[in-house]
Length: 491
Ligand code: NAD
Image 1: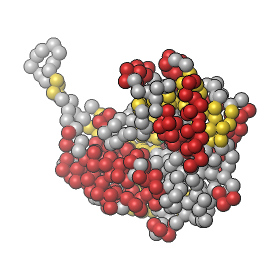
Image 2: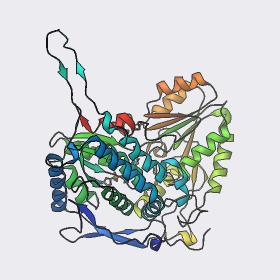
Image 3: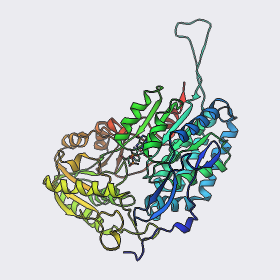
Image 4: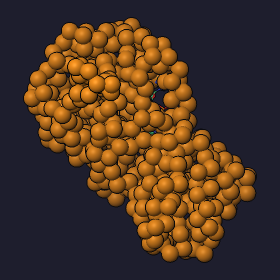
């Protein structure tokens, strides 16, 4: 364990935040602020404004003006491409600082920045990828179905003012996945970061501004769901809501969209299964599956595969390896290269996870390891030991709820049909994993699993070209690649 877990605020010269409205960095009109507490220590990091309805209104009106009258939606393709490429370059030049700010926000270990999906490299690539789309947003010319001497022409036009709301767990990447396609399409944006991960997003927006995005095209309002997020999603001048977060807030987004018939894309939670067959490389399957719920963000990841469905014949082998991985997890200061995993984001989430662990035991699941909160120098933070349950059945709350913590539940199956039935027995449908050497079985499973992404013999491989999103209550619409971009265009 590390000697000190004080976050290195001075490393990044962090100043208290201001938000960006119409090209000006500003405090909230009413002067309210929110002080961020670091999840590893409980210490105050810094504060930023809480935007009220009046601030949000100013931001949305600025975005509206920039859309209706400003140069951005009408800019030459070369200009939009130049700006998007410049953002990518600035992210690369300032990548280490962005990751440090992210660690100050949510305590994700710096070493985890080596994982492509959590790295500045992917954030930069997302902007580069979208720069490549700008001059390809062509419409079509269609022949008349019944003949005649007219033609039909389609235009693909920016959808308008985008209200983008992001969560705290991957603030840089998830901001990029919304802002890059919106800018490429010619939209204007009001962005609301999570109150638990604001500083890294403010820095990224500063880089976007530096790259030459005109005033009013990107605005940031900071603060919690109430009042800031609520005012944004209900604002009548917003044309599209792009949301990543929980299912509960996703419902509010859908309700708010009725006011003005806003377009909506939703990236919500998951309770994803990993299906491990008897012929699989069981060691890799167990190491990677346990890793998805313990390394990096400690299971606070939408696509984490928190239900391992393991063939009966290899269940013991799987459990042995998963327990070994649990023993290798190291907690502490996110700036320490030896630290592998984060605390939970806040005390409320700590209580919730400990409550679900207790419920799992009460329901009759067998606790193999973990289940306790951090002790000694970790007690000031929101740490929970890597937790492994077996003898879990699908009706238990640990198998049904998105726990968002370092908890893996192991269930067993005998046949592929039983595995599919158990895997799909959830309201969620974000990701799934299949572990087998049989190609035909992988294809059969992929066509039957109700999940937006199915990985085979691997996990978390995606890049800026890959569409990502959920089936069922994990959301609708896709982020990334051509499919993601379409959500910012009207025909
Ligand atoms: P959350 O839903 O609590 O918050 C997400 C964002 O919504 C935050 O910015 C928050 O301030 C805002 N918000 C809260 N109440 C609001 C309201 N009434 N109106 C408008 N905005 C409001 O989620 P979280 O705890 O930040 O993130 C965790 C959740 O996000 C998990 O469910 C996780 O699975 C999901 N997630 C999904 C994906 C994906 O791509 N599918 C990626 C990351 C996280």
